Image 1 (cartoon, rainbow, N blue to C red):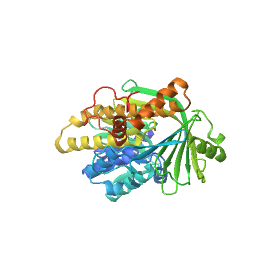
Image 2 (spheres, rainbow, N blue to C red; image 1 turned 90 degrees about the horizontal axis):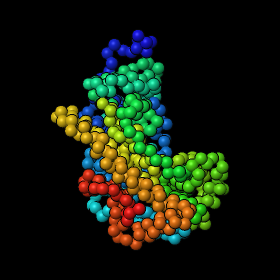
Image 3 (cartoon, rainbow, N blue to C red; image 1 turned 90 degrees about the vertical axis):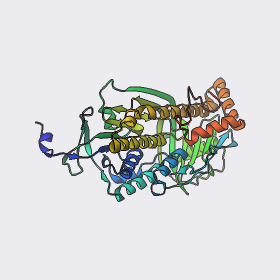
Length: 414
């Protein structure tokens, strides 16, 4: 017997679901389970302060807002401000306003940074008596194909712990322990590297009137609100570029040129990093009683704001599936969880890929691809049908509800 095994309690704790990870996916799932009267334990390797301050995506799309509406949780878990549904595309300095409202009635998208969503979900879960354990180290998953998996970890005080459960939800991201617990060959990974880098900059500077996507011969740039006095900027760059090579003066000069705004107001830069645009899908999103949720199962290029929203949809489907099983013994939704999630995942992957290629090729991808991309943009700006398709996809098209068949090639095709 190992030393760790000797230190484990004779009677491990027991719960229905162990949720690994306290980001948007994990805290959404835990809150929905709690709302359904289903017990769960959330394990998070980081501290509460670290999780609460992670700066990531900032738009909860319309369909995700309506998902929270359906649970009666919107007012409690969503912060930010309503988003008016207008995007500005700026091509060589010329502005084009495009609506991403699909014309349906009901709640609209929210400009809600990830950390605000996570903070509110966490507060709601804890206020309801939820069991959330930060600084859980050395998490490991066992007996995933058995009737009662076991999750082992080391508590913040160093004490070894074990929890048996009916289901494990892997919500710990692309580099978490959940997916690595799946044996080699059980999942198929579909990966794509866009060959594009973005310098992302957070600054205390005035936000734009509308989220702004800009195309120019100098490369792609974007400007998004992150609060009443803060902005997030993106600049296309080589994926292996050095963020330290981007001085504040260089950042603001590049933004003014690419955004076509010589008078752009600058401000103190509080954070900057370079990341590579990539896409990844694992199929299936389940192994035994382990269910992968959000980034643990799929990564999507940030263009279109689909990453966090896909995580919210996964959590919604899994919460409803577990609820069906606990209440009536019906495992239909559990068995079809992966297929239903992946249909939406591939739909959003295609849209994100379409938008990524269009806005980057329209800049400096060579004359032929540049003309093709600009033709697609012109179609978006002038065709009601293309604009309507774009709006449906930005809003959060449900491919199952719409009975979409075949390949969606973006608004007007690719």
